[in-house]
Length: 396
Image 1 (cartoon, rainbow, N blue to C red):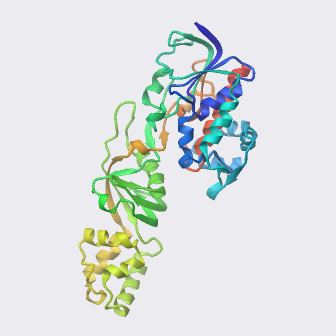
Image 2 (image 1 turned 90 degrees about the horizontal axis):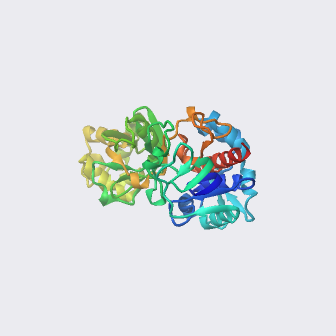
Image 3 (image 1 turned 180 degrees about the vertical axis):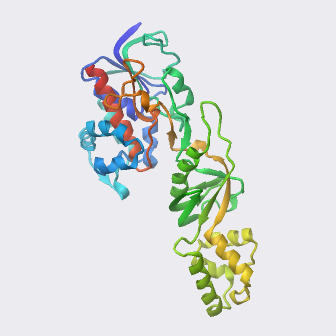
């Protein structure tokens, strides 16, 4: 049986960073389920790797519900510490998202892997059991273990619900986050069309952003962001079953106008442009290739001249432009970006990432009940918590 000071389970961003931090003073083995490290890292930022968000830490923390838990790890491993690991340049883009100047995730992964020269790495190794005395699969013994197995999204990278059962550590409900939504209505005829700068509403939550129609439903930044509110509102736990989804969201297609403003605009325009066909007129408000679908759906003839549209139809137009509803039947789980829920933070020491109930057991990355919005926030969590877990385990 091989023995190590520290065994790290999971070779994603958090696991790699934990290995870099701990291998400076300890004998470390990194156990990876796949044939290579960092498969999920390669997918981030559309293959460009939005490695972090460069907002000041104090401002960055305001984007997280669990900011008090993250504070110590964010200050223990800053963006400056992260950038110092690389010998190439990074660029900041919209919303302080940071990418390698080359635009290649592979460059980031290769540079991190180069720092693992003192780490033993075992590939194609699926951890199936961890004994009370830290024997893994009856063949590896460690004094300390760091679990960095990720969440449930992108299962092709080795993530999965089974990873949460490796220890008796308490977990919160596991849910999909930042996910496209599946609609009851067939939208394949308008797949690829974008609604720009609209407002999406679910109960009391509102998000402004773009909506993209897909073959199975709705996606785009606005939908992705409001999906978190929806997922957290539904009672389900992926460790037990898939969610049953039956709800409605509404899209304000003209958020720059109030109901009254839109009625007044129509009253004036329907008189001034009386000979204009409704189909052509609505192109002032909607994407050209969405107009016909919209009119067919609300059962109003697009060939009608504006002067011939009655009050009932005008009111219907206003109501539907301000509240265009969709029935939602599920999450497109194959494309969910993050996991909501995970290892219960009440049982993890925020200053070390060590379990408060099982000594010498540490956690890092998305396996923890931590998540942020898109834009480099989640890689920031992975690198900072991974570094802190690795450093703490090696110093104890």
